[in-house]
Every structure is written in structure tokens, then in C-alpha cells.
Image 1 (cartoon, rainbow, N blue to C red):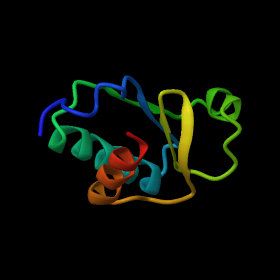
Image 2 (image 1 turned 120 degrees about the vertical axis):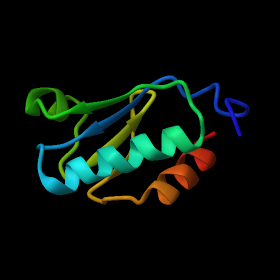
Image 3 (image 1 turned 45 degrees about the vertical axis):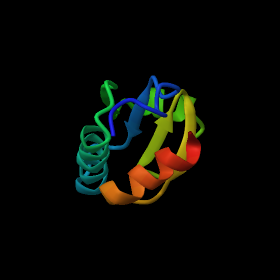
Image 4 (image 1 turned 90 degrees about the vertical axis):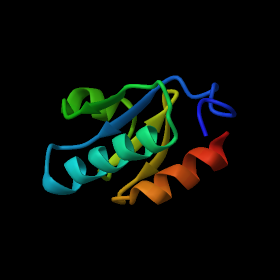
Length: 88
């Protein structure tokens, strides 16, 4: 698939507490980015001060281009791919 259609996506972050669910989401997002062949580094943020700055109350959360797009759910990589396709 390559970068075609996803050049709008420059930043992806997973916000969490460092728990098993948050780490699972981080791995799933990384897998989705790999499958889409995106040249975007997925950042894993567990610093609660930074997490709170996004106004996220339930974790884990996904932030794309500085906008919270999912929270409180551990999405599978296929679901992350669908979410990114929908956002684009």
C-alpha cells in the first residue's frame, strides 16, 4: 500500500499508564503502521502530566496529528488500520 493516501499522517502517539492493555495497544498501533508501510514513528507516552495535557480521562488512547482519536479501548491492528483509513 505504501504512503499513498497517508501523507497527511505525521504523528501517532499512544497514551497510557504503562499497563498491559496500554502496551498491547502500542504494539498493535506499531503493527498497523508497519502493515500500512507508513514512515511514522509511534510514540508511547506514559508521563501522566503529558497524558493529562491531551485531556484524556480513560486509557489507553491514540493521538494522531495531536488529536485524540480513540480512548479507553485496546484496538486490534486491523481496527487501527480502519481508523487511520477513516481519518484520511
